[in-house]
Image (cartoon, rainbow over all chains, first blue to last red; front, side, top):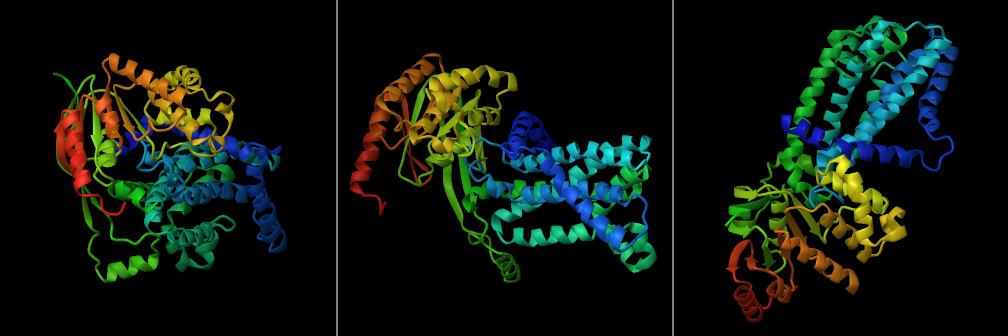
Length: 261
Length: 252
């Protein structure tokens, strides 16, 4: 594990270069550039507000902000995991044949989507301002929640990146799993809603390590409150276990990668 | 006296997971239920020992599948040996014909930067080396064109320039000197000659036995992972060629 972090640190400029290139490629040749990254959560925000707030009249105050606070970190998670899971397959050019450190390949899509996430944060602040929602000192906790998400995401991405090399259809299953995970994470409903209406489900939902993270973002960016540290700690522990497992499996099979790519 | 590379009883086995290529989750389930045994174990290198003196050039010969590339990857640090020890004194830069690690979508400049950073060169040094690499490689206005627009020779020229400009203590060349036009080949040779004069070490893998005789100080002959010959290039090459003509390699 220490070795893993040391490698990541050692190649930080390589990672920086690759993340920058990904961002450049993404925005190259598009007039709207970064606006495209915002278009996705904005579209969601608009449609869901229409469905849940206008049509179903859920009666939540400042519902668009609540949606945005959940969708933006969820988008990071979903895209980072989807791209991270195929990163070793996509990087077949480098793996096992060159000195290129293959663990870096998994970090790059996770961080690229992380940068997009970070660039969307000011936009959430603008929406909060427009809706006259006061965000407080709990904003200082934001880096902690971001870090927990990063660990969990990196762990899952490393695990799936390894498995994908050997079992190709895992990726299809993962695509469905990510969609399911999005729905099982309170983005357009709230945890308390589940607790009142379907209490037997609340316990199961609490097992979802992403739920605590998203709830943390919603607490900070919507409620102006401190995130629930207990569920955040649970997410962090699950994240670390997944990262340790993922990294162990990765290390165990890394020399077989090139035979299967 | 002082060795740049010391390889002591190195054994490398490939324990391939017993999974068909392009396996599915179904295969995983079946494999788990049937308790399928692990995959075949291939001994790519068996108890290989040798050393390369600083400032000398080692030539490695052997048939396809004899373990030459595995050995190069172990010296480069891409693979770890299962047994034995390998000590490399100084920095290493590999230059392999198979897999230059240049992505077709990236420009030559971007590729060179990424390659340098992957070799562990610091960011400041990268900025300093870039102009030299671009000049040496003679790729000219292609520097900002994607690699897919490059000819095989141009790609190799860029890869060679990166490896030479990094100025490693040990340079690993695997079947790379065959490409490029004559004038660049001469430039390569001059660079390699200069490299050796400065007390640097080279390991060369080639099928061209005459190059080993002409350039190398020592030769290593690998046969199915075993050291079949080691020492004076002329006698090793002679022994290798004698055997190759005696027993023609099975269907190549």
